[in-house]
Length: 133
Length: 133
DNA sequence: CGGAATCCTAAGAGATACTG
DNA sequence: CAGTATCTCTTAGGATTCCG
Image (cartoon, rainbow over all chains, first blue to last red; front, side):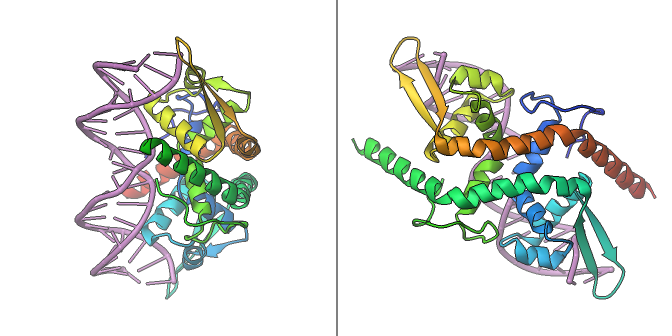
């Protein structure tokens, strides 16, 4: 993990390779970030609840994702000193502001998966036919 | 590259690990997909134009990204048989429908990079102080 | 319960060089 | 111009096991 160079105090340009905006894009590009952020939109959640909601995450990976999001100030991590342990994750205002864009992405994915799947199948079939010729 | 299993004909559930929606999320999670799709929002572009617009992409990687997007039916690739060669990439209607969500993500990234950077710095400083104690 | 520690590998990604 | 061909290498991601 590298730090963002210097203080950046204005809207960035994602097309510029030297713009730290790329770091944010990379985080969003993370395999689990979208799902975690969207899951937390419903309210604070415990580790196990998140793990159950986000199907298929290994605990290690979930921890990594949560730590990264905490570092970026998108969520807070609150530990309750009790037995058994209890840790609650809650989105910050900054994190909440990201929910809408990511929800939009998720909805797009869920509603266009059929088209994408069909396109893929057609493309692969064409490629196969071309290879046989 | 794996094919999406079977035909999926309804809105998916991104939280389900067995839902092909995950494949779409993975594609969006690709480092360059967002930038390429957003770049093409302005209209059809040639390979070199894309390469210039999306700063920092290696030609190989750009090709990979474009092929993947073509396979998913998000853009079309048109080759002009002439010398020198000319290849134009153009978004499909499906691709265009993805522009809005991804633009929203890019805008969020560009406008909140300052906050994120500050949070990161603060987090790292705290971690450093804790390590020294 | 909520991780931390360890190990592993698949592949995303980049650099470089070359070509139809 | 628009790629392809290699090679290398980092690291995200996952499986497993153990700990406070």
